[in-house]
Figure 1 (spheres, rainbow, N blue to C red):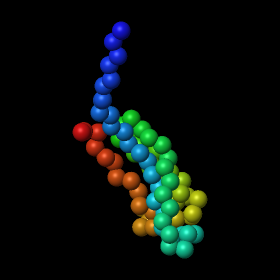
Figure 2: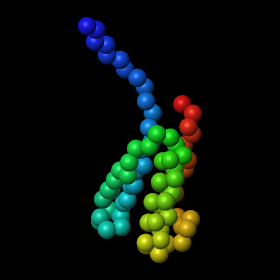
Figure 3: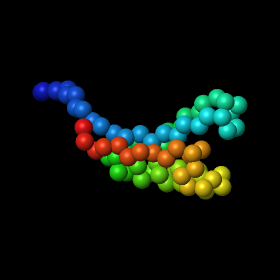
Figure 4: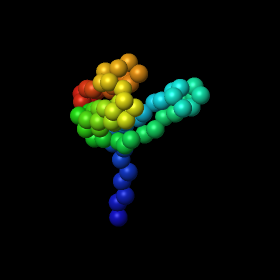
Length: 76
């Protein structure tokens, strides 16, 4: 019998939300919204979350109080 262990490099993208100062008395809160296989998937989810947050708060799109995600490169 043969048993082999290997280490492989993987790369994933994690969507997070950082909030400071709204209802937390200046404290920072970070939430994770999943891991994704590529930058396109992660960017799509992060943009949808940011737009939804702005809509729920009644904030116009591209207002400086919501920082929209920048799309990372798929290149390593």
